Image (cartoon, rainbow, N blue to C red; front, side, top):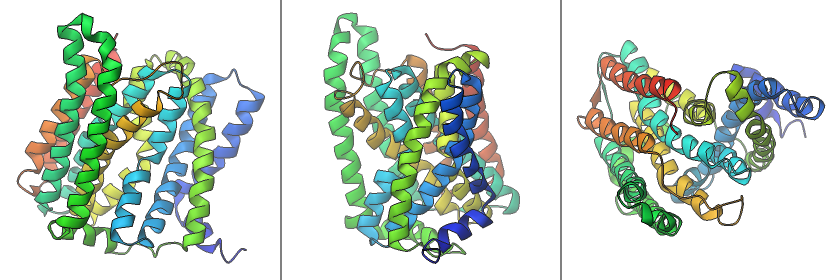
Length: 368
């Protein structure tokens, strides 16, 4: 039994990030003993979700490595943002639709601006100029632009014609189905019909000094156990977030837009930053833009469809105007900075500045 767990134990022993797993039992016990200590539970749950996301990411990569290219790519597409999906489902069941929408918009903006910008900055500080696959960046940016248009339509319709507001739920279901179909066709394009155009990204994922994948049995068990733990910790997080946000002077929208997206994407960010420092910018760009397109075209539509079966009311794709504007600007910025296929550290600074402008604005002027 110990021998089977050896890869997992070795990973925990050599990864300081996974040492934070000690907060998982701490937050679950604290939730039982002090359910009213919302601020404490919020902080503990944040520290617990970060290592769980890292462990989930490693398990997913190991299962994908054993499944072949097509199946592995589909698995990564489905489970790559499982942490954000579980947190959003928990919030959806609790009726906190504003938090869910803020986390969706925040994840898209954070991955597109913060993760990509920090990768360009960290890689550029070590390497004078870096190059990456423009085809992959263009495809992912195009998918993001499609999702932004789909999110813009319900909001623009509601603003232009208030009588059309009751149609938002029905329209959102139709848009969700279209986005999922577009994402499936994007997977077919990148993994099957034109996979040779994405060869450098595939090599980046498999090359370098990455450790060998875990045995399939260990990866599947880890995947199942960690998913359950993420669900339990997410329940504590969602229950405490509103009171904790008030204690810290933050709105639920700011928490969802900034905190949840940074915490949920911690593991992906670590991989993207490490790849950039090792001059594997294809990997960083693929993670940042690929994760954003997954959330926009898969996670968000799934939440819309699932909301009809859980939670007090269905969720629609009508975001507040500021969120739509931020997602549109983030998408267009990503298109501009990735168009040349080359990067330097100052491009990362520009992306991070745009992100900080959004974060500061959202903190000081919360949306109604």
